[in-house]
Length: 184
Length: 104
Image (cartoon, rainbow over all chains, first blue to last red; front, side, top):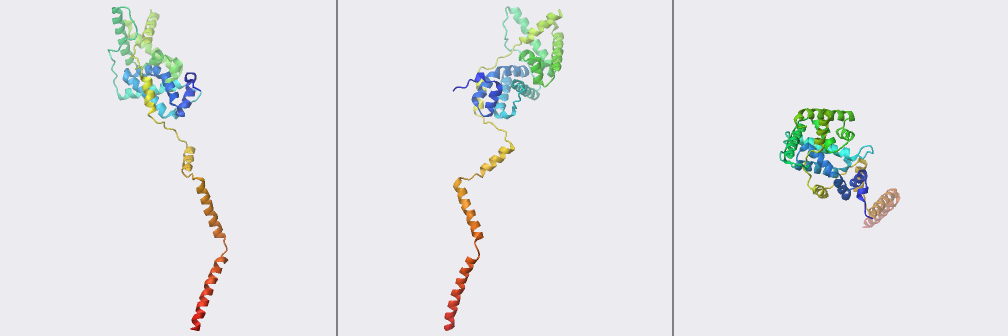
């Protein structure tokens, strides 16, 4: 009988991975690669580095699946995004200066050439201002706005209380509003 | 005015550009994992069980070992008298030979 992998939740897949199931691992990778990549990308600002981080995180999980202790109260994604974030921070510590790629392609469509220019410029400034934010504010902002995590999930990933994350986001937004005054 | 700026900032934050991941990223990870063997966390009991398994002997070896042990036990419990009978025989022969010498 064929196993319906998509029907299995993360915990079930992890138990199978602990028994050496490559198929379960493949399903878990397919399920979480995209979002993990987005989180990693926001930290390292480079496609290659983000892909390396995601690959490292998944391979670490495969190599030592016992590292994941499947407490029912703990979501796999919370734990895994924390692993990804920590790997990114390690990488950033090794490579102190992160330079923004000015030729990054634009993801959204724009109707006119002027608007394209204005939005592109505003986005570029926004990226620079976000990069200049304190690390914890930047992390909270990335997790909530880019990776699409809820404030509570971001708090779990960062190991903080919900109110602390809300406060970090509030401060980050206040700083950005102030610095982006001309572009808002 | 402030609300408007809030909305714009949020909209910009949500539509931040990013390079999409390579379409084969997941496949690459899965393929790489196939070449990696898992490291299992070994508990102390598992370690002891493995150690015992190292000394596991096939059944014929146990039969042989039991037979040897039984032989030793039987040998040790055998009374010394049987060996003194042999000693007695040896002294009789010595007596017979020395009797011959006396005649000469």
